[in-house]
Image (cartoon, rainbow, N blue to C red; front, side):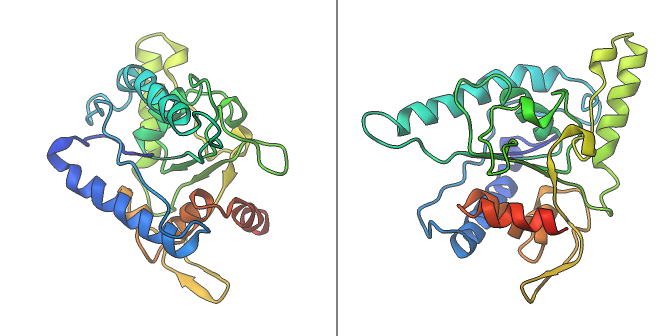
Length: 238
């Protein structure tokens, strides 16, 4: 599942679909499943605008539907003698705000969660998400934020202003790229891995984080296409 952030609707769904196709191509190249993968470009919630991105209304309204979709897929694919499916959540910007709420409401675990350029989350810890455990016993949750992305953290900052104005401290969101939140942080910068050089993410857009020449795209494909152990090893090395 690929969950977009603010200002995404059916009017500009072509860009989201293109990002989903790009991720699937990288999964096919990088992963262990070949062509046996699919990426759902998820538009099952009303994304916020610049005026409302600091609030939680869109996330709170959208989370139950995403949780139901994830549980529904699990049940449909694991009926009878079928093994449970590998289901991954990749969310961007405000999509991480909504998706983390949903992953606190699901009945069944997803395989992993990858949070790109988060606009802040209200879930207290990565360990509170209903996500499978990695080999080290912690939740398989990964986060990244590029140094040239000067927009993502505005969502967290604005949420704190909303909390002050409304006298509601619970409205303030946390930054999942803080070590204390407990996710594994991976790079969106210029890196070389295994002799392959990757360009840095240069902006905030989902397309920037899923650019073919970016490490964030390569790493997201590793996690979501059956090579989680290698991804975990690379996080440990960074």
